[in-house]
Length: 234
Image 1 (cartoon, helix red, strand yellow):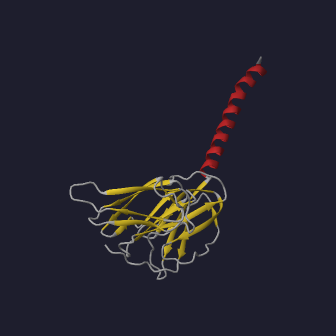
Image 2: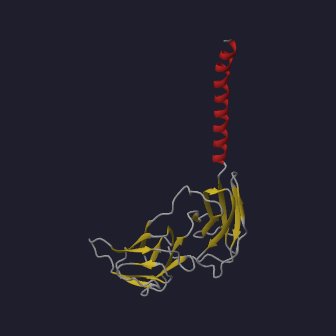
Image 3: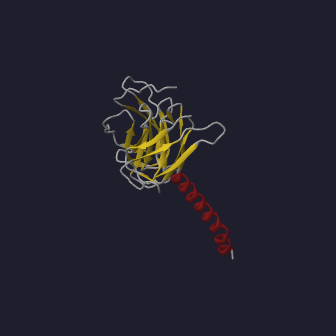
């Protein structure tokens, strides 16, 4: 009787401790499966470079904290594309809206644009009439079904040659555009090795970047590009 009672009292304590240890181990392992990478991109003069696109391609599978947007809006305002660089995922639908009083084109020069009006994947151009007083602005929606040959779609206007912009169709969910301070913060990158790509509109030739090893601890990296940011009209 005494032996039986001892077994009954001891067995639950052993099981609870084992279960607790397993849960803690699993929790720690889960926390260590992803890391944060902060990338500072500088121009040729060592100044922070905004509108650079940082792409991380992890070797291990994982889920990005924020999925790439599959809808976006690019406005034509004061003879500019706003925002200048837009990052979307494959298959995104991008709405272009002409808020100026005069006509503009939406010209795309890199493969990836597909619409019911123009199924030609080698590039296309649509004309948007200017906004009339008291009427809604004219707009059109384009579907970007695959990354462009250079990673970005160049936007332009035949009428106003100075207008330019870009839509970056990213192949990796770990793709972030740098802010005004030149920093791109990429979260929940799977642990392990990863390759890095940095794109900027003024970078003529893609610059090879070092391989990365991502861990649980936050990491910081500085990348210098051989470009000088062009000043755009305000």
